[in-house]
Image (cartoon, rainbow, N blue to C red):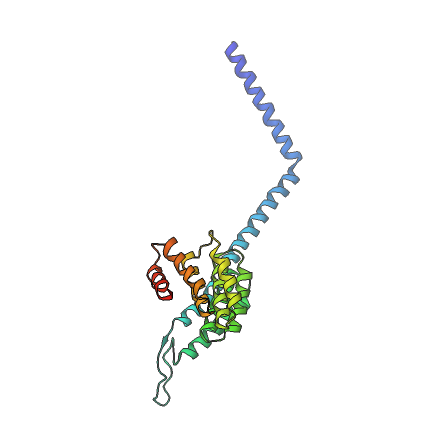
Length: 240
């Protein structure tokens, strides 16, 4: 009997709790439906956002990719046969290829100025400008890319490019300042030995032979496994 009574008590207790839960749900039915509906709406918004983000990434990346493909395209002489067209994917001169790459990178910049792909396009556009001898334009483009890239590797690469553009304009003090700063950033993804080699070369171009020698020596002493160590040691011996 005691066992049966305990069973009845537990059954009754469960029934009472179930009833109370049912009453609570019924009393708050509208509120619960509103919450559930709100969660569903948020989930839909999140899904749309992620889809659009992926779509944007793909489109921006595609535009950047077009510029990179053009930048590496083959140079093929223009056809001499009347009516013949330039082979698809090739350019008759390096100048023509560079101009096409500049236009492609500019399109990525215009459409996605703050996207990673747009920032990378700005960096590559600056590199093309520098290769064309347009150092002033390249310096500005590199500077804009560095500002937009924050603390990423692209920012450091853009600052390195900026220094190269400054050196091309014989703005050696400005270039040395940028390179000295970069060489002191030990947490940067840029190889410090490579930055030091660039700094040493700028010192040489600026006529500061002893500063160049000291910097080459740093590479030889501090980075014995560097791919630049042979050149660095040779430069130290040459400068004397």
